[in-house]
Length: 226
Ligand SMILES: Cc1cc2nc3c(=O)[nH]c(=O)nc-3n(C[C@H](O)[C@H](O)[C@H](O)COP(=O)(O)O)c2cc1C
Image (cartoon, rainbow, N blue to C red; front, top):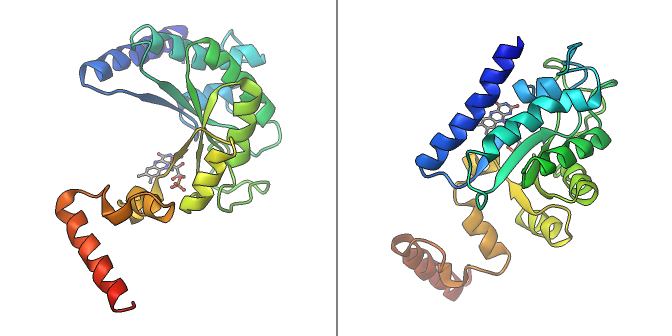
């Protein structure tokens, strides 16, 4: 990208934020992870530039920081602005979590409120050897960024169990959970989670037209011992 391209894209993020507000959105999350453009600037593997947008740590972060600033001047102070980062590339010579902590600090100074902590995306389709997938495998990054950069964090990726999610928020490892595929599988996951965690008595959180029927069924089933 030329300097002109860079300036145009940064300004476009600001314009998009302004249109988002006009359209009624209340939160913005910039997708700065998973190999998309902002991540390409952040990762020393992808960013091979030798001008003021690459090379040093500060230069690699410059694009993300300028995007945040451009959004902030077009986005109400009271409305949250989040960035999804790949907290590590899981690759030698790539982003490590300490680097992501510094990025989070720089983004916070530019007006960002929350970091959504994912990983990976640079380096091709093969999963990096260092990456071990299990439930909540990216939570430690949300925890470390929250702790070290003193910014709210969101945990994401392979989370599906309500109790696991509740416990990690209660323990202060993250401020929020993001779910994707679990909600495709079960769009009523939040209602089931609330019930599992002891809220939603009598299906009171459900829309009344379905909650009433589910409550009746539950009572009947319990009466006949099922
Ligand atoms: C509909 C959908 C679209 C997604 N698009 C992308 C994408 O373009 N690039 C990417 O790296 N990940 C993408 N993801 C992955 C999500 O960003 C998310 O990090 C991932 O699904 C982990 O969360 P989960 O385990 O709760 O699904 C997508 C996921 C879904 C469900």
